[in-house]
Image 1: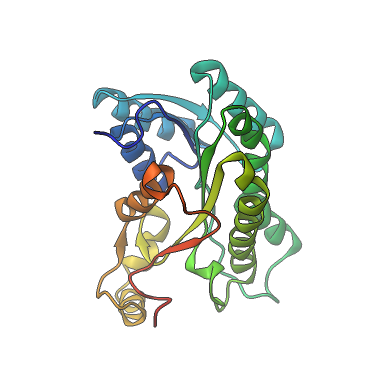
Image 2: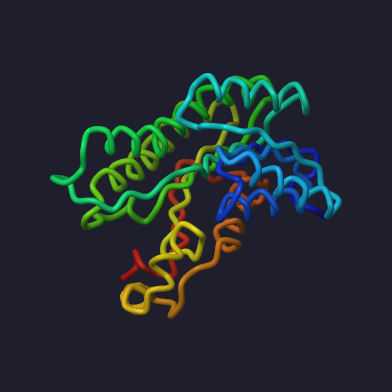
Length: 250
């Protein structure tokens, strides 16, 4: 039996990469998926793919750094499906610049998209989960949220913030049967990482850091998200789950 029958899931950044794989997998497992992305054409294509496979989904254009757009996305999900059981805060950006080289504008952009968006998503979804007597929130962080990352101060700060915000929410809302966990991908092959993965020098360095001798795939992150979204993880909250091929183990 599918793992998410009768569940409604919001997935942000669902137009490509890990978000796309998460949306597709949750839909295959029975969820009605509200797929959002700042790239409306891309997320419409993902919804079409879900529907052609027999699933049910809706697409919303969505700038996750905007509170007004969060209100519209969540209200749209409630109007269409009546509830929200699962929230996957997946949308994010990378930023490779040292602390001293990062401008205030760059800092604010990274923090708003990677961290403030998670706060806004939880703020506007949790009341509906409270009404529905529970839910599961999965916040996509990074291994940079677990260890120091050279030359990426703003990105590391944003992803570390996602980890700790997830823990705080897990503590606050456990009484409402709302679980909150973070997922920490390592070196995953996605459109955002293509420039690194396709560079022989960088790929060699990536592989030197992992215990498993390969980069990860987006569907492997999606599988971790499915586990945390489902009742298979019903007694798990406030944890960080690395999907990193053993980078943090080394």
